[in-house]
Structures are given as structure tokens and as C-alpha cells.
Image (tube, rainbow, N blue to C red):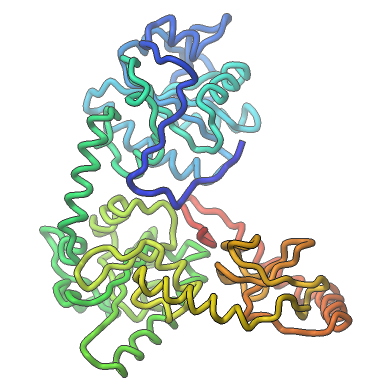
Amino acid sequence: MKVEMNLDNDSNNLVQAPTNGDSEKLSPSTLSSLLGSKDRDYLLCSTAAAAETDQVKISDLEGKVIGIYFSANWYPPCRNFNRVLIGVYEQLKSNGSNFEIVFVSSDEDLDAFNSYRENMPWLSIPFSDLETKKALNRKYDVESIPCLVILQPDNTKDDDTYYDGVELIYRYGVDAFPFTKEKLDELRREEKRKHDSQTVTNLLTNPERDYLLDQTITRKVPVDSLKGKTVGLYLSAQWCMPCVEFTPKLISIYQKIKQALQEKGGGEDFEIVFVSNDRDQSSFESYFGTMPWLALPFRDPTARTLAKYFDVQWIPCLIIIGPDGKTVTKQGRNLINLYQENAYPFTDAKVESLEKEMEEAAKSLPRSEYHAGHRHLLTLVSEGSGGGPFICCDCDEQGSGWAYQCLECGYEVHPRCIRAVTPQSSIEDRIQLDLSPQLRDVSHERFSADMATSPIPARNHAN
């Protein structure tokens, strides 16, 4: 089973899960064959203790909207989504909604299953029932976790039955219920209406606040002062290692863009607004104190609204708003990594122009090179000849389009990072690198940082 989340889903695409045949109404017998076994007609209740004692008859789920939840305690994105799902579930239950969730575990052992289940307010298939869990994974073609498959009680239409519940919960929260086609169409129409009428003012203000904070945290800057500017919404947090690594780069690029616009004249301007995901006020103030731009107040409700509105599932994230108040791109971080300050103003036309410049520059590059620090010959490749998005092994920054790639081991570097050497000196440099304890320690430290996990989604390198 793959354990990954797709961050580049089109915001209008809701994934329908395969039905594997004709749909049928979720009668007690259908539910029993789906969720039970010949030896079991019950599900485990949520319990504060780990004992598998409290039970609910599967037949009691008749007439309810059911979410089959594939998840595992060992995978951080599952734990992240679990907290969101608990909030939505408890709110729906408190409203009297006929909604139930059944947990299908991919945990490694019974202790992990029990530990994970302790915080779940819903039902579970017993950890020991491997056959039912395997059958459910096969039936719904589960390729990644977390996965939430929604079943309607009157399961008679294939196109109105199974949806990617994880995306729906992240995008719409409780508003997605009861997860029918009609409800989702209504939400999409409302979403489109909001985007069509979007302005920087209605994005960043609320009835209680019409200002942002400057670096002093005490001075208030009117949101209306951003009208007519290109604005970056920077969702980030101090606890997030990828955020801490990206922020200094963003500060440098921000200052270069501001300086270039000032020298150019004409009144064009660029600003960034920090949207904090920090855990406490002191962390927010410490982190924001390193930044030269504006910020939403800590724990302002607009921060959560923006994350939901733009379907942000990972940080750091840089969303670019144009001078007209409309969204230019949600891939600001990727464009900064690829093109630095040249990415401004981040429009499709600008990106297309930069890609053409790369194509022209590549025509004069050697078809192959030996690179200092790598023993194999590197070949120039493009997206059309075996290349694609990559992380440069020399500068550790994102790359796309043209790269020098080792066809033997997959090593890749930006063309700008190539340090051409003779084959013999390449081997000697590589031996020195392998034998240097100091460099080994640095490499291990970076690997450890990149692999560090946290209770809230963070991603070191975007796709």
C-alpha cells in the first residue's frame, strides 16, 4: 500500500472510488457481508481503555451515512487527518446527523491499534480480522492512506455513492455532509461564487478586524493598503523544519523583488502576509520577528478560513494574489525554488517566458559532463527525455525542466550547479567527500531534519 497524499489535486476534482460492480442498497445483510465475517456480526465501540469489550451490532448502521476510514497510527498524515476528522465527526454527532465512521486499521500490531483507537470516537473493525480488512482494501482499491470512503444508505447510483472523503473533509468540513452529489455540487457552486468575487479585502478581513500587524506586532496596517499590489499569503510555522529552512530564502527573494520594483518605479509593489500555524503566542512572535513583512494576528479565525478556502494541506505554502485580488497561483513556493526573484509576478505568462528562456539556454549546454563530487558521467535531460521535477543533489533546491542526471544512479543537479571536472578528478573529489567525517555529519543532520515529523502537515519539498 502506498502511503502518500497528492498535493496537486485540481480543486474541482472530487475522486470517485470504484464500485466494483452494481451498487446495492445498504441493507443489514449487505452491511454484514461488507463489515462482518462468518464469526462476527459486530464492530468495536470507541473506548477509553484498550480492551476490546464494548460492541455494536453491524445491523445498527442501517440507514446511516457511513465513512469507511483506512488509516494507521505510524503514518503522520493519518494522525494529522485524524484530528481534523474527530472534530468534524463530533460536531455532526452533536447535531444529530445520521453519520458513522468505521476504522479499518493498517497498524503494525495490536498495541499500536489500541493506542490509536483510544482517541477515536467511532467504531472499528477488530484488528485480528485480517480477511475483512483485506477485502475492504481490495473492494475500494485503496492505494494510499488516509482514505475515507463514503457510503450512502440508499446506495443505488454509482455516481452518487463513493467520494474521496479525505479531500472533502479538508475542503468543506461539516458542510460536506451528507456527501451527496447534490450537496457537493452546491458547495462547488458556492466555492466558485466566492472565488469569482474574491478581493484582497474579503480574504484578509473579518467583521471584527480590518487590519494586519507590522513587525512591531503593535502597529496596525489597514488591509486596504494592499489593494493594487501583488500579495503572497505565507502559511508557515516555527515548529515546521521545512518552513524554517524556506523562510530565509523567501526573505531574500522578497527583498530583491521589492528593491527591483522600487528601482523600476511606476507604483508596482509586492507584499507578503504571514498566516501563522504556530502553537502559541510566543512562538508566533519569535518567528514573525525574523520576517520583514505583515501578519495576521495570532489565532485569528481568518487563518483557518484561508487554509480551508485554498485547500492547504501542507506547509510551507505561498499563495499569490494578483493586483486585481484574484488568485494567481497556489504554487508560489515551487516557483520561488525554481526561479528565485525572477518568478515575480508569478503569472502563467511569466512562467511560460522563463521556461522558454531555459529551453534556449539549454541549447548551448554540453550534452554530458563530469561533476565534482560524483564519479559517474551526468547526461543533460529534459522533461521530455527522462527528466522532470527533482531536488538538486548539490544545492538541495527544487528543479524542473533541464537537469544533469546520472543514468546509473539517478543523481541530479541543476545545470547552474555543475562544476565540470575531468573523469579522474571527479573520482578523487568523490573519495574525499566519502572520507570526510565532517561532511558525513552535515549530511546526516540534513537527512534527520528532512525526515523529522510533526503533528501538523509539513512538507520539505513540494512536488
